Image (cartoon, rainbow, N blue to C red; front, top):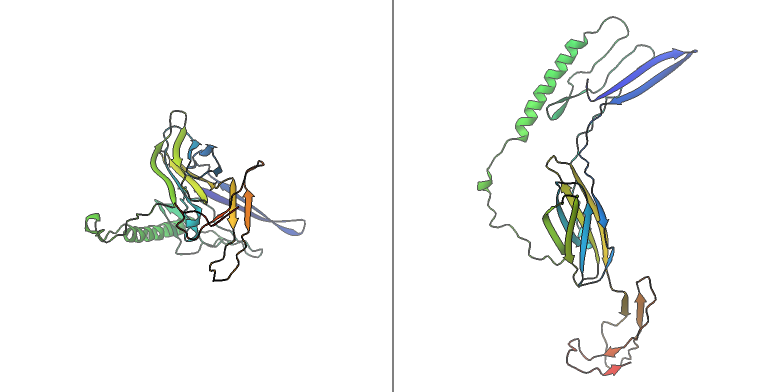
Length: 283
């Protein structure tokens, strides 16, 4: 039997027509891998060391990266998981005058599923040579599979013929905090990694893709906000002309979940290169 079978029963009862439709699927294993963060810090300070802890099973190899979320504005950095092909039975249509079954039939041969070259029609009267029709369909599927296989596995050039001298190699890793491609789980299925945040205040994404030798795989991700508890924001003008009067307005904000007390000092310098110079105004 195929991996999915649809049972359709069309009948009359008490002067009305009824239709029963049920699909049966074969039970099959999946490639889902248990993978989850066992401990994670969602709020971090700049220039500090943190750790990632994940829980899985024995014999897992994982790749972990922590990158700036703003980089996904151009293209999402999603790592797809590998899953088995899901099978489904074809739709069956039945009319009340003459029973009929017609539609697309899918046969799974090897690794490709082909379409039938002929529709299947089952009449309510007389016999139907179903075995001959199925044989015709299987022949068509095999022909389509052979043609597709030749086009898929044809290689025009080997790896030695590819010139990579002009390829651009990435040199700026400022938006990436960590990248570990060969982490392995211990005997208890724990995966551990340390990394250090940069001075950039932004939202970072910790993303993990893991697999076993049997290709059980999974991908998880969480967001981490790198910020400071207290921020001072100043709305300064871009240009000042002679005779202009500048009134400084500063806003102090607290992003922590606790009350913070302290002293705010405001100083104004004549140049952005203020190191080693004295302010001309302070408060």
